[in-house]
Amino acid sequence: MTERTAVDGEPVGAEARLMLDARYGHFTAMQVRDRRVRGLDRHFERLEAANRELFGAELDRAAVLASIRAVLDGGVRDAGLRVNVVESGGRPRVVAAAYPPHPPLSGPLHVKPVVYQRYLPHIKQAFGFQQLHILRLAAREGFDEALLTTEDGLISEGAITNLGAFADGRLVWPDAPMLRGITMSLLQDLDVPQERRPVKVADLTSFDQVFLCNSWGVTPVGSVGGVPLRQDAGLLARLVGHYESVPGDPVD
Image 1 (cartoon, one colour):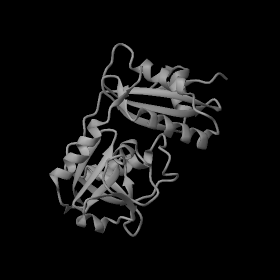
Image 2 (spheres, helix red, strand yellow):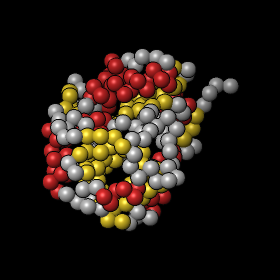
Image 3 (spheres, helix red, strand yellow):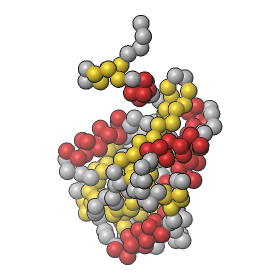
Image 4 (cartoon, rainbow, N blue to C red):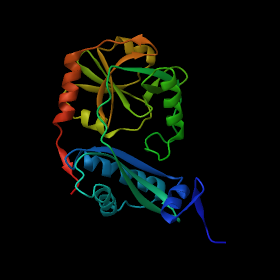
C-alpha cells in the first residue's frame, strides 16, 4: 500500500510525515534580533560537530541558512529560532522553525535538583522528552527550572540551561559532562578569572551569585530546593552587560 499519515483524523502530506519519521537528530536554538544572532558561527560549529558524530557527514551550511531565511521570510526581524537536523529517508534533513521572540527569564529563579544524567550530554538532542517531562514535574511544584545531578548531588547543567557561579571574583563552571551552551561559551569570553570544578547542590549557598544561561539570556538563581542563595546585583549586571554587548551576526 501507499504510505499514508493522518493527524487528528485529517490526512497530511509528506512534509508532516517527515517529522513523524524523524526520531534521530540534533538541533540548536537561538534568538534573532534585527535579523542577527549572537554567536551564529558557534551555532554552526556545534551543528557541524554533532552532524559528524551522529551522521558521519558534513553539515551543509547553505541549506541551514536557506532554511533560516525561509522561516524569516516576509520581513521578520525578531524571532525565536530552532534548527533541527534529523534523519528521514536515510539521510539528514534540515528543518527550521520560527516562533515569537522569547524575552530573558524573569528572575530570580527557583530551581529544583533532579537526579538525572543525559545520554551523550554534549549533543543537543532533538525530541528531548526526558527533559521536558522533568521541567513539567518541577513546574507543578512551583519551580522555574531543574538542575540535573548525580545521586550524590554533583551538578552537570539545567534541564534547558547552563549553570555558572561567582566565588571570590572567579567565574566557576561545573566540571561535569554537559552541553556547552552558546551563551555559556560567550560568557566564557568575559575578562575575569574562570575555572571548571566539581560543584554540588550543597555548594551553591557558598557562592556570591549563581545564575543560569541559555539563548534567552542570563538570569539569577534565587533559591535551590527552597534554600535561598546570595544575590549580588553588581556581578549580575556585569554578566548581563557582557552578554548584551556581544554583537549579533547577520543571517542575510
